[in-house]
Length: 245
Figure 1: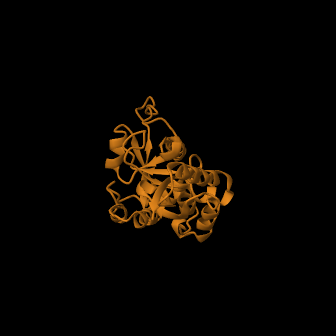
Figure 2: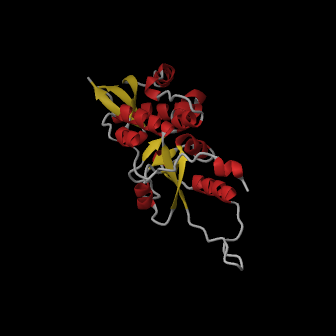
Figure 3: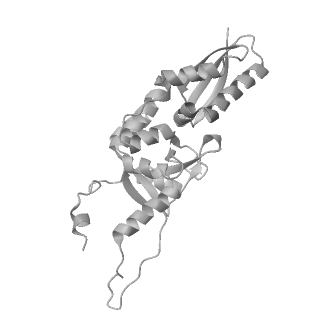
């Protein structure tokens, strides 16, 4: 008998599966930056559910007892299976779904079994596959999800504070350098976007054309693919050109 497993404290013993207060507060934030930072902090100190597909019962022995099986190994296998499940994310990427409540999981898949895990464990599992977490998607297309990008997922898995991209001066300098040769570009601003995206706002001259904006956007996308530092800091992005007089 595995006494170590039996005597290990269960952090979810009194968990009723509802949305935890600190996560509810984070999701209610209207400011995109505050919301993203609060959501990451809530994951770090809270619980999420992974969706485990139902499996057949191990069966019964001749005396009616459940056949011997390894519940610890079964749980680990379930975690790996749930971690391999993905949904669509912006930009053609994939994300691992995780759920803030049993109610949210039931919307996604009424047949799935909820597997509760601490946020750090969820992040570590996500890093084994996509590196991106989709919070509370309604379906496999990722509808309605809040996304947690790779930089935040790494920080969560390592139990370290998250350094948000919009606070990163070195990142901003590299993006500015990438569009330095583009006509009519005034500046690039890194901002928090909706649903966990990072918005790169291209502030263009009032005389900028659509071609100018497209060329600048292409340079930004190019640097996110070819500069190692930028690529490590940005994955879920949207580029928004804006004319400025």
